Amino acid sequence: MWRSIIVLTVLFASFGDLVAQPPNDDCASAATLCADQPLSGNNTGAVGLPGFCPNTDALLWYTFTTNSVGGPVTIDLGQIDCPIVSGMDNELSMIVLSGDGSCQPNSFTAVSTCAEDSVDFSLTTSALQPNTTYWLIVAGALDNGATITAQCGFALNLSGPGADIVNVDLDAGEDQQIGEGEYVQLGATSTGNNYTWTPNSGLSGDDIADPIADPTETTIYTVTSEINDCIYSDQVTVEVIRRIEPPNTFTPNGDGHNDTWTILGISSYPSCEVDIFDRWGQRVFRSVGYSEPWDGTNAGAKLPVGTYYYVIDLNQLEGNAAPYYGSISIVR
Image (cartoon, rainbow, N blue to C red; front, side):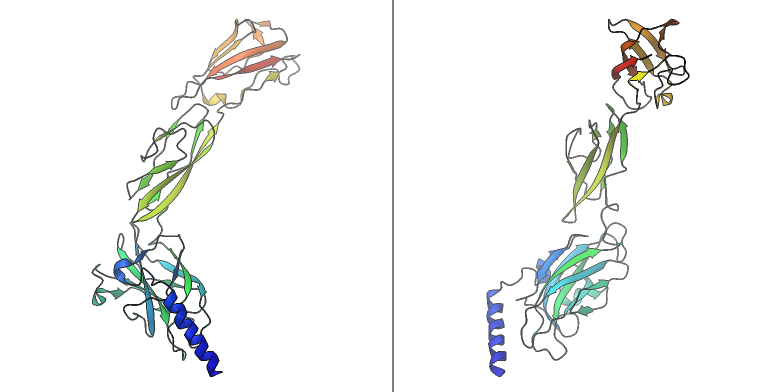
């Protein structure tokens, strides 16, 4: 029995010697936590200050900056993976601190309680100040009769009203709807004041906040911005629609059904121009506005069965939709 314990202890000691010292085991090299971007860690081999929570050691340091509105943040610690070593604890602890950036131990003040567990757990702070840097310490525990501080792998996630960036400090703007051939100006905002748009097809620029977008089809644009050393993205959809839907046939035979060329949606464009031509290019119908749908006549005379061709210009007050072209068949 004792030989097994000795062997395990030696194996753990050897494992500790082989594992590289974590780069963020001191305040000056704290790793950055970004909102809603899980980050893996492992405090095996960490050295430095003793823990800020009772009976803790093997500290790892993290830092995060609150958003422009502030508020409480929640940090989730999960996926705890501790090696099976006799005498080693399997609990980790967390605490959030405020400080002046000097990294001196006496410059920190706790803004949360200590949280500790051997299974997934969370910590929620009090309301934090906006645009302020805070520090998170993850440490191994040494209690319940353990003789070796817990040194384990884990994963962290930062969230909450004081941490959320998307739709707070980065916003791609409202979804837009345009007609075919039209354009719209996008309007992203970012406290980082830097922008990268993808895809860049149909955009007047991909590194500005407010490019002009004139896609030929419905497109989801993603804007990315760096804020406080973190990369965040938000999306906006530009939906491309047909403003009107001209039918391709009608039957002006006087039966009261489908006797006129009714165009859905065109009543919204009172200044539209509708021109219809026969196959020789002679205009057989023209209307400015379309309050009286075409009945298949030219100057009161019935036109023969066949295919005709239309050009419709909506003449919008806003936007610049291309004319609609197509064919319409008279069937009797």
